[in-house]
Amino acid sequence: MSPDLTLGGSGDLVLQVTSYLTRLNLLKEEGSQFTESVESAVKEFQQSRGLTVTGVVDSITLRALDEARWKLGDRILSLASPAMRGDDVAALQSQLSEMGFNCGRVDGIFGSDLESAVMEFQKSVGVKVDGRCGPATILSMMRLKKIVSGGTPIALRDATNRAQRGPSLSGKVIVIDPSDSPDLFDLTQRLEGRLIALGVNVFITRTNSSSPSETERIEVANAASADLVISLHQDRYINESAHGVATYFYGSDSHGVHSIVGERFATLVQREICARTDLLNCRTHAKTWDLLRLTKSPTVRIELGFESNPGDVKRVSDPGFRETVVEALMVAIQRLYLSAENDAKTGTLRIADLRRAGIRK
Image (tube, rainbow, N blue to C red; front, side, top):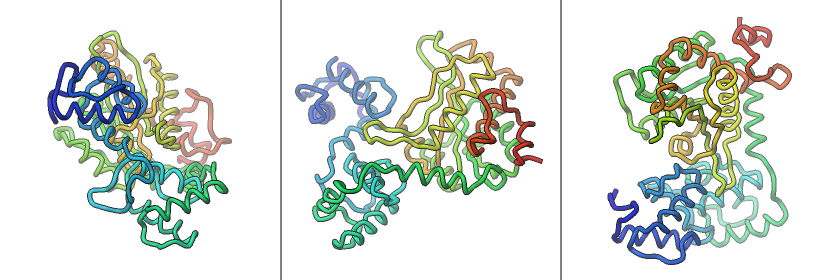
């Protein structure tokens, strides 16, 4: 990655970035200088795509800019290696999902699930069945879209799957992804012990001494075919007064999609932690970070305080505080699978109360 994609930089890559921003109507004209107007446009783009807003074009932002330039119909979409990515892929996923075809989550990545959905659609409308989305398939889709649209099959499928799995945690698979903080690794081990006692199959993405990359952690989560992935971190900010807890789930306003289960679990976690501790409520947020986007299972990232804030550091270093957070996470996990009649108000449910729902001995 070139180091000059920040304010004051210049070069061919800056020209490419400004070209993307101009096409997206975020910048008036392209150029090879990284000016304040370019920085402002980058921030606006990052905000709209659910990326961390920095004004710096890192590899993730550059990839997102490249994906954003594609519109459905610009190219023939098909299963390839490396996988085709772009807003055109996301648009195809969204439209097929609205019509009731199961192409997986709307993530803008052309995978095998999307290929199968395209083939099913092609069969249903009588065009060549090859799994490739070209002009004939798009034309058929546009015609049918006028008749069938506006459904919520993804939400219905998620709700059905949760109901079929039942409220018991026994047999479920949960992946815990802690940062390299010793305190958060201790919290992870405490949570692991509680979950194993309930019959949960638990996978941890790293050991106390290893530091796997984000790609490696995503691979662990996907290989486990998890029901849920919990990523534990602490935030950092230049001003040490920043403090509090925030949770993040996969969601993209530009793609018009949110992880239904991810959003619900993020909300439950946020509420339970805030009800049990004095951490400031920094709310839940939809993001398109790779961990949230590329992990196939519902994934939530929890920023448990700021490591740049002395007060938050003191809280997390307290074993009693960590035990309280573990209870909040356990209750949030269970509430995710409880039916409405067995659920309870935030902050009132205790692990001992779960016996009444018939989910613990």
